[in-house]
Image (cartoon, rainbow, N blue to C red; front, side, top):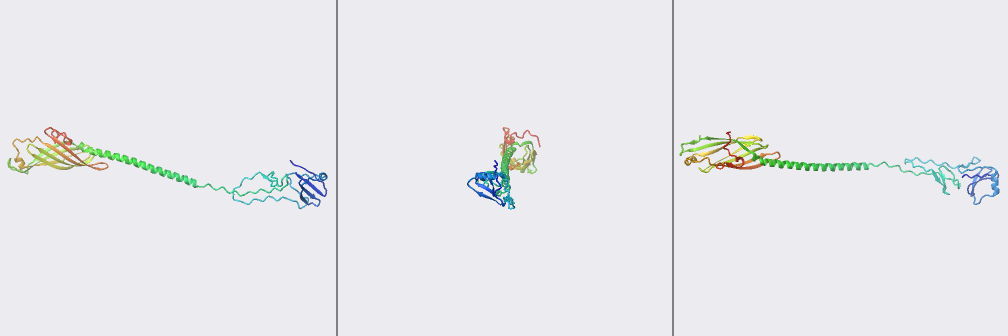
Length: 325
């Protein structure tokens, strides 16, 4: 609320503010001054003050009659700062009576105290966002990718190792069975007596018997074989043997030739009417089988008995019913 008092044109003019403890006296000389007082002015003085109206409001500035007019200094301009601008308050507080007044008020409407202009402390500028979290995230992502890549490589390597080991095992098993799949295809026998001299009972030199065998390899493995064939004729006491080496291509056929030598003395010692149809054949074979992942050293044994016409392995079916090579 705005309170008004009127002062007369006497030796002293007065304007009274809310409590009457401070007065503004205006002398006829034009000089103005404030005077503190603990008591209210007298009624006579109040009547004198009412003769000339001087309206004073809480928001007006004190105007002096002369050139020495009292003015409150304008608030100093804040120094330039590179700091961020802090939002300014819209109200101030009187330092004497702690009355809240609007921003821009120069004197307190309650006690008349000059309101100092607001001062603003520098506000630190907002620091730019640190790039460390971004670098940290990138680093974590890279480490995760590295771990995933290493883990994937280890898993892939283990899987490939298992696949390779399974393939090697399968290759070895197939190679082991390949020698048991060899089959006879034909047989031919011829005799060379060009080195035998004399007549029965007085032969000298020797006779050579050549035996050609057809051998089929139906497997995917190429192999180098060495066969040792032994023919035993128990009725006449003959043991004929020969060893030959030959190559068998994958899905191919070989025709090794075995030769047996019969000496002149063996022929001279034949009994009358010898039985040369009773015999046994023994086959001892060694193989170097070339597999996909390794080379395998294998062996094979096979037998045949003409008296029972039975055998095992390569000689299981015998050779009596095979075509000539």
